[in-house]
Length: 311
Image (cartoon, rainbow, N blue to C red; front, side, top):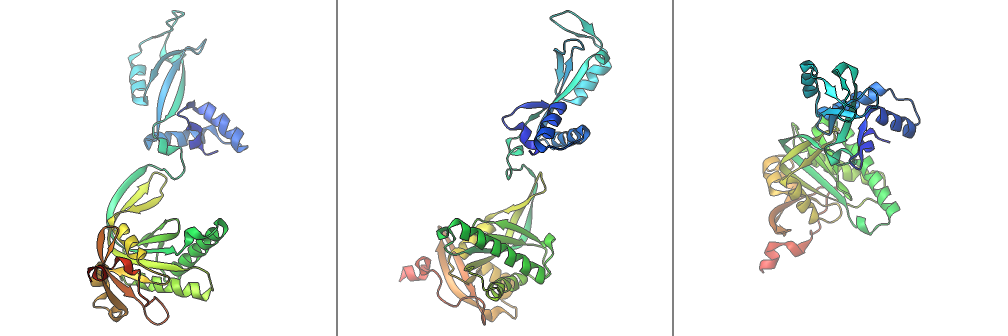
């Protein structure tokens, strides 16, 4: 049991109870100081609330409670007595028992994958997207196999091209992946990466029919409380739209990417202008990249071609 899951249902726990339940579920000895340290860190992160319950030393009934340690310290310095309203007994602060309780303040804290955001920052990037064609038509076992193969291929190609992990954010999309490349000296390395992915699939003889899209723009880099990194933004959507026009082995890039990165490069003749297309209510100018044995020079999905519709 994860320590965070102790708080499902919004219950309130003291350190001793949390310690006892974790020891029972994990079947191992865990130092109570370790648990308290982690819980206090969650309080600092704004994920848990803590309160201090001042108890009668005889019957342990609650005499007073405080929402934070600073208020508790202020009361302690006041030297005001504490009284049990039922028995009438009065006690000094030092005579009483103090129990610290923790309570969930943020539901995302409990559920894996719903981690609260620590911070976000806008950054320029090049986005590579790919998905497996007809993925949804495969049975579950084949989907898992495709997904494992895709992760293996992407990892190998990133390593072989010596792309540093700090220059990427890898986001699974269910039937594929988005790789956010940032801080690159040469944005065209994303084209090299796309070609490497296709060649690796052929080399390994994998049944992995991918189509690819590439866009340049900005995204918001999201850092979650658990250090998980993600990204969101319009450029991601545009990458997906370019990719959606493709068939197997197509490498489709936006006009923005072509003009910013490729129009004056040695690769410019390998980008073929396909004109403007309507994708999900958005007009998008597309270029098709292919050369030698990589890419696909067949027509893309034509039903969205604006020029065809206007004839």
